[in-house]
Every structure is written in structure tokens, then in C-alpha cells.
Image (tube, rainbow, N blue to C red; front, side, top):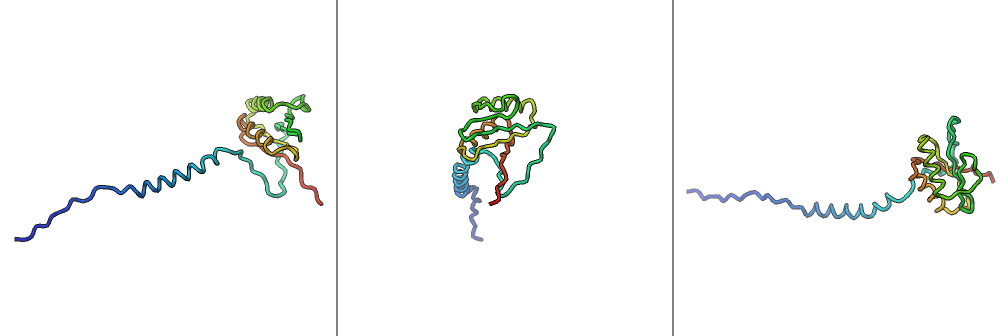
Length: 143
């Protein structure tokens, strides 16, 4: 007689503890980075002197100026010198972009205006349909 070997059934359980650890780490990472991804305006600013943008002479760009007091001026049409509210500027730019979706949109801000005023304008322009907003600057003076 030969001794009988007892066969053990293979273990069919899966150890999920490492997967839970990875999931929790990813959850924490996404919770930290999600607010940073949703807030902000996509602007590519040059770090040195910039080359002039090519100007298409056939289509007039939409230029919004912000003076040192925070007044908004839409430089399109007949009433260029009159200050306007932010909501009026956004409505007029949205109407222009509905008519000409490929129009270039530029912001010219006074160097003494508050940073938040320009960012608020750029964010509002983005919600009005401007996919890209350019900043107009002057070349630096040689000292």
C-alpha cells in the first residue's frame, strides 16, 4: 500500500490590498491636482523679446484695452474712446466672434493696472468664445 497524498485545492482568492493602496494614492493625487487644472487662463507669455505677430490685413483684430483705472475700451467700431463695463465688452466680443469666429482677440493692458483686472477680462473673453487671447506689449527701451 502506498501512502495517499492529500491534494489541496488551489487557492482562488486574489489579494486586493496592493490595488487598494494604489487606488488611494491615485485618489489623493487627483484630489490635489484637480483644482489646479480647472482654474487658470491659458496664456503663453514670452520670456524674452517677442517677434511681432503676423497681421492679416484683410480681417480687423478685436482689441480690448484696459487703462490704469481699470476701464475697458473695445477698439472696434465708432465708439472707441468710450469706457465700457466688462459685461458690455464681453457681449460685444461674443457678437463679433459669432459673426467672425476666426477673428484675432488681443488685450492691451496698462502697466499700472491690477493683474486681477486683466485676468478677469481674459477669463470673460474665453467664456465669450475667444479660444486664444493675445497680449499686446511694447518693446523694451534700451537703457
